[in-house]
Image (cartoon, rainbow, N blue to C red):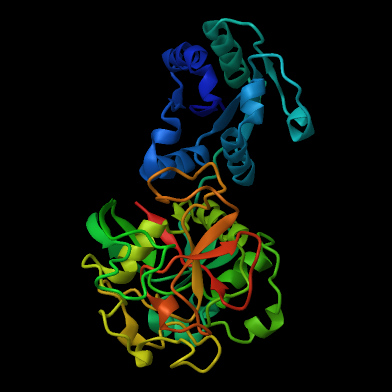
Length: 397
């Protein structure tokens, strides 16, 4: 089968050569995704890049010393590997290559004109030199309600079977497109701190977000499928399938959403900071999901909770204006794009230098109201996890 869609990964230093290369591929009938925006693209551009990199038939890496040294190109390549894209390295400039790239079929276009390189790539794709996998024909899922714990069935979760793999789909809340007040206003919120951006209007595209944090029951099917290793204290967690899953790292969050997206053919992912905060507080800049005044009866925190996680949805009085639950307390949730990643873009994390921390939102069962505020930005090393770290899903539109 000939590939029809191509993702081009390249160093921005090779833009002049890549433009006619891409044009030549497009002239041959290929649907090519190629970008020159680089660091000026913004968070919406990052979302688009992530979507395209994991959905195109073939991932073409334009190999040069610059692309091999680029953390951004390496991030794209890792995403292609994680989502099992067909990877075609094309040598454009002499470069020292090692590791897994040596195991791939190569196109040697060293010193070649862009049009000649396009001919060689097209020949590999059209004449079968590259083993393109047939896209899996996705059969409609089968309903599988028997896998749902009773509590989750009552809350509207759905049990399904995709190609003999069970999965639990959470109920979703639609968040409309439009602006909201993001960040903190120290005149309104005396607990504002330096880690939080000053309040401003932020535009967010429409999306759907899980009404509840990811549960143990949902996570368990990914563990059984071998997509994720079981977290610490897993036997204890399995005894409480209707509680939020904990002991998750940032990479666990990405792995789970990648598994779910691949299985269902739907664009599941982790919410951005903007998405999470809008879903948690609405548009009016309120301090807590329900308003500006703290109420310990509305959230599972150290003040009003049992000193542990609780089943999702146990605090209906803590719902956000959109009806999103457990966004204050219970578990803190991985959000956003870690500033250490090339996915980081100026304007998404205003006033900060890239570091090795990811971001957490929502506070947890062992923290007080200071951490349950909707604008709170907690930092946590991407590889760390504990009994408070959880996940919430977004289904992009």
